[in-house]
Image (cartoon, rainbow, N blue to C red; front, top):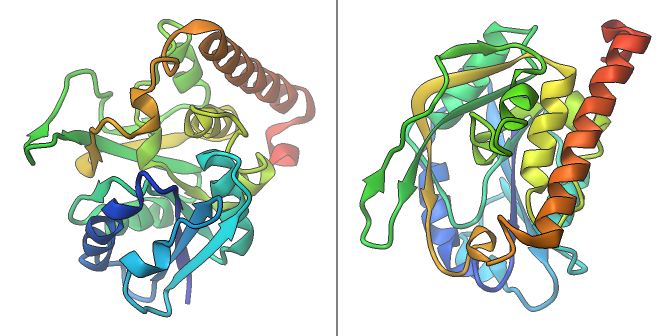
Length: 252
């Protein structure tokens, strides 16, 4: 039975959101013959994530040394078994049908390496807010995300919705080991190696709250931000150059 692995890092500030995350996951359906597994990776000691989710053989909680969410994700990747790898933050909520669409699209389009979907912000009062700027539904040619991102250091698709083929994620070494933007680094790495796909249906409710990493003052400005953006872009360009030099078939 093919498996989609949902990977979720969690620290103490986000552990209380896990029941909502689980509720949205347990409501998902999958194409016939598929199953899911949920890898929850505690970033550091004494997080206590197991107390916030039910006993379910599809859920596996483990702890690793504190290294930030993207290091935790990559450790969880090493525990996963799925042929598809799904991003899922502990404080977010999957929209109805998200996993079914991810699996179906990648199954129907073997030439596609990764998929993303539309996002709605989930505000503290429970309301959902959309925003303009989504690309057209369908194929995203290899390199298109980098071209768009270089215009303003912002991708046209949301990395929190990523679902990708395991071979590509492993080839990239998982998520970039950065204090933030590691999922953006993964997105741009995938974009350098393979065509993607954007689904216009909402796939994620992205919770906005004070405890999230993206709310930190240094997330979008300052020396650290400049360094993160620089290495993300440089790696993406290098991957694209190597792919052209040695051939797409060899890279895959």
